[in-house]
Length: 261
Figure 1: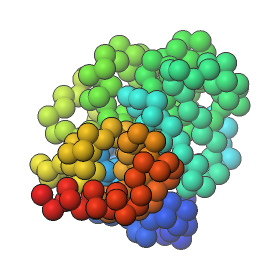
Figure 2 (figure 1 turned 60 degrees about the vertical axis):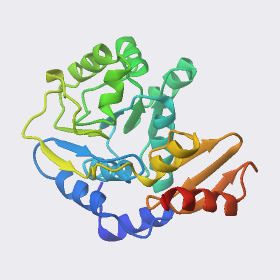
Figure 3 (figure 1 turned 90 degrees about the vertical axis):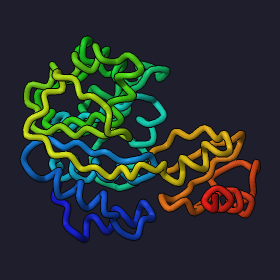
Figure 4 (figure 1 turned 30 degrees about the vertical axis):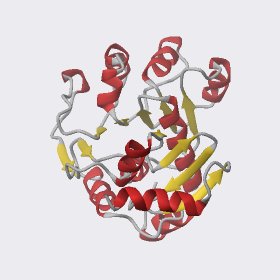
C-alpha cells in the first residue's frame, strides 16, 4: 500500500501517537531499500510500528492471497501486533494464529486468505503442513524477537516455515539483544542492521523489574494483578485500561520512583 505522509499521519492518529520516533523513521527508510533488515531495539522502543510500516509499504490493497507473514514467540505478542494493525486501519485483512486458540476458528479465517498473517512458530507450521496457508504470494517475512523463538525451541518450526516461502523478497528480524546469533536457514541477503540498543534497559523494563510486574506487550502494556496500564516509551503513564489495583496517580508515582533511581 502507498504510505504517504498523510496516510502515516492518519495511522498515527488512530494509535494516539504524535509522530514517528527516530527508530521508526530509520526502519521505514531502510525497509524500503533492497536487502534484508535487522532491527535491534529494546522492549518499549516502538519497534512494532518500526517493522509494521515497511511491511505495509510493501503490500498492495486489493491483491488476493497472503502477502506477508510475521512470526513471533508468544501468543500475547501475536495478539498485540494484530490489535495494532487493526487499529491502524489499513483496510487489509489480518489473521492471528497461535497455540491455545481453536484451530478450527483459524482454519475458517484462512479460507479467504488474509493479506497478513501473524502467529507463533508451532501453530503456523501446523497450518502450513495442513495446507491451510498458501505461501506463493508471501514476499515479506518478519521474525519478531527471533532469538526468543529460538530459545523456546522453535528452531525446527522456523526452519520449516522459511523453507516454504519460495517467493520471499524481504526479511526483517528484530531482537532486544545484539548478541543473538542468526541461523543460516534464515537466508539473510545483503542485510542492513539498525542498532538502537543503548545498553540500558528501557524505562518500561526498569519499572517492571523493580516492582516484579510481568510485562508482555511490545509497546509498553504491563499487567499487575487486575490492573492493566499503558506506559509510553519515555516511561510516562499514558492510560489506565482496566481494573482498580492501582489508581493512575499511584501508577504515576510508581513509575516516577523507578525512573528517579
